[in-house]
Image 1 (cartoon, helix red, strand yellow):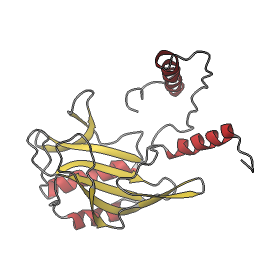
Image 2 (image 1 turned 45 degrees about the vertical axis):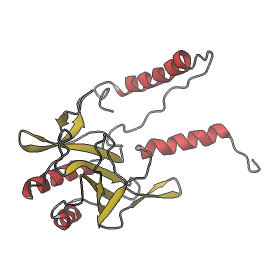
Image 3 (image 1 turned 180 degrees about the vertical axis):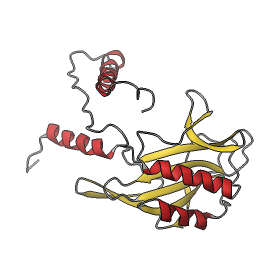
Image 4 (image 1 turned 90 degrees about the vertical axis):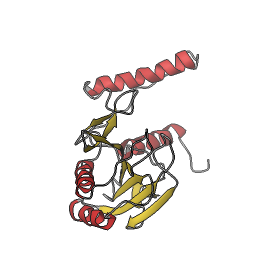
Length: 227
């Protein structure tokens, strides 16, 4: 979402529609296919329910942000306008935690240090919040203290999980989860359906448009009672 953020929103939607047209004609070699306009959002900001922030040491201080294009160099940030607002608070708390307890930060070149990523998941209908620290092992210090600060300062905070990833890989999450606080899951709804979301669950990152998407699919399917 960062690459075209500065553009007028309608122009962003036009670009996305054109991307689909290009794929159908240039790659698919299909002609005469009707491509409908992209359906946009009423509020195209602060809509993502999942964030993944790599953590690095920059000038001897912890930096959270996103990777610069075609690199693993972090561009530090304090807020992201397409992520839920609660992420701004969580990032600040995690930075304070790293500094207060001298938590070691992972170095992918030497494969040393502990803390690799911060991952957050938010239930947009339930306001439940999950915080996941991805670590190169299980020995992160003072996690109960961190959970206490999150509980006190983050509305809807439900669970803190350490995800263990010791692999020399670009894959963010490992397979092992160590639940520090809560149940290690949150709930969210799409329409009348409730979903349990764990650190490793896939869930659409834009819950508002997911409901629009599914309803459009149902409209096109035109299912009848006996189908």
